[in-house]
Image (cartoon, rainbow, N blue to C red):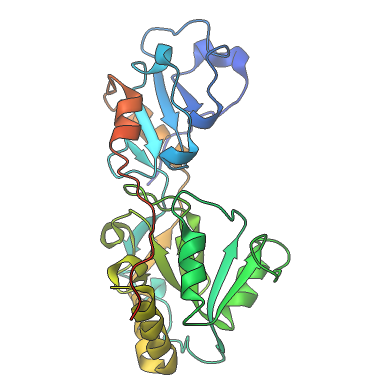
Length: 287
């Protein structure tokens, strides 16, 4: 899609000339707001994090936003990559044996060791039943350069599965962890409040919350790792779909040029926090 150009700037001297102003939710301060708002100027709220990690918007702003830019499916602009069907033969990935040379079961790259989702408790339980290598601040292994393409690429050569566990289990919450696993050739194990059927390639992931308990999940992972055909079936989507990363600024630019009608959120805090439905993973009985 060809989009007429937009100018994106952080120069506050241009505030009154701008068609759109983006507010990053975690950085909003009541004492650091625009002095005025020109008629017709749109205001958008940007947030990548889940509600447990975001502060409330100051009351003076709660009824001022026209658009939202988040991971939520009901946002005006979504920050997640797009899943597209690869129709042309030259767009389709060549058949490949993703099982070959992999020797280790599960990888977890992590830096935050105490989370609202209690993913750390989940991993502690999972490690009782299957090999899990923990890399980063919460483990004893390292992967350098930290969180780099080389790190993921090297890990994907030997690991079957990647724990794409979110720090919060809230409605629609999903981050780059999931897409990194797909991009680098590991099967993601997910635990979040997202509806993956609407954002993920079909048959590409394993939902930890769909199992009766952690032991059943571990047994399932071991079975997949033993079977080349079964493991490769989790990569079959690569011949039919592709993941497209498009900066959210492009969508905003298009909306401005198309003069998409602005909404008016009566209470942005109610929209963000009351619809979050966040929960915490709790240990279930093991058999």
